Every structure is written in structure tokens, then in C-alpha cells.
Amino acid sequence: MDRIDLKILGELQDDARLSVVDLSQRVGLTKTPCAERMRRLEKDGVIRGYHADLDPKAVGADHLVVVQVLLSSTSAQDLSRFNDAVRRIPEVESCLMIAGDFDYLLKVRTRDIAEYRRVMGDRISALPCVRQTHTYVVMEVVKDERKLPLPR
View 1: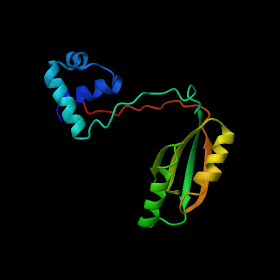
View 2: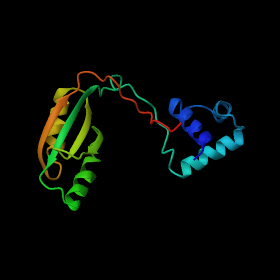
View 3: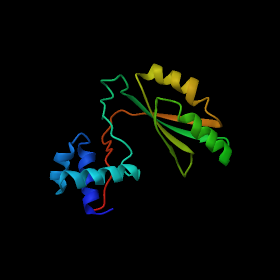
View 4: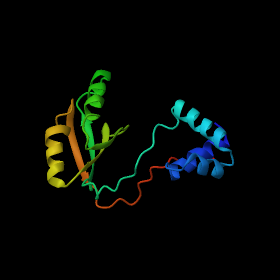
């Protein structure tokens, strides 16, 4: 990956709806080589997709909690079972395996606290090997940067 690829990625992170013509002008290429680089970056899995950045409040998902999860077993089989099951819970926005005093950190979005209580009771607590959870209600999102820092 060269500096032009990195420029393409940076521009697309800022605005994934750029036309190839506009993108090529911003990175100093003509249309065809720019489009070829984009296709290669997509084929190689560097660009995994193009997404709309939705306002959580506008779509009724502005209640945000962070949940620490401690498992009763961390065998490879149990971790795999947990991972497969948590991927099927649509309210779980992200799931991170953590090295430390607990095993996973979940970011969960719901409409309100009542809906979160149902998700916790019906889905999260029922995940394989869950021994203990701790929920932290997010009062304010200060920074939620979805752009990756690219090498310069």
C-alpha cells in the first residue's frame, strides 16, 4: 500500500459517497487508475464496505450502555460458543474480548432502559457461560471516532 492508496482511504473515510471523479481529483489521479485502486483495495479486503452513519436518536437507539461480562469458562469451545451467540444479538453494537479482570466488553444500544432490561434478561444473561455482568449507563458520548488513523 503506497501513499496514494492511503490518500484514497482517508478521503473515503471522510466521505464514502465521493464519486470516482471527485476522489481521483482529490488524490491526484485520473479516473481509471483511481477506480482500479479502489477495486483492488476492495478485493484485498482493505475496504470492507460503505456505510451510512446513522443518528442513534433518530432511529430510536439512543440508550447506550457498556457491559462487562465475566465468563465461567474460557476454553476455546466456550469462547467460540459465546462469540457465535453474541453475534446474533442485534442490540450488541460491539463485543470486545478483554485481557484483564473480566472477559468481554459489550456496547449495547436500545430504545430505553426498559428495553435494555429485557435484552439483558432475555439475551445477554442467557449467553453461554456468562457468570457475571456489570452494566454502565453512558450519560454522554464525548468522542466516538469511527475513522481509523492512517500512517502518514
